[in-house]
Image (tube, rainbow, N blue to C red):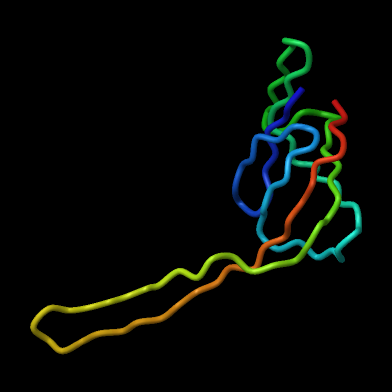
Length: 103
């Protein structure tokens, strides 16, 4: 059984027991969150596709940690103009463990 959920503008294919990193959610570590935007659910070969979401379906996950992602380097340069800008970015992430899929 698996589901496709949408959170933070991205889509994730999840199954029970999976650990995923999503854009930061407002929840403490150890809390339980419910992802309501379920776009598709597969259960025993039966596939339900939502328009745009599957009615009554939800994915329940527990929050493992609030963390920061890998550092990305952004470098801008204009050749022959002596223009160089180097900045870094680290995205705030929430690590989730999928505990249940309700279809």
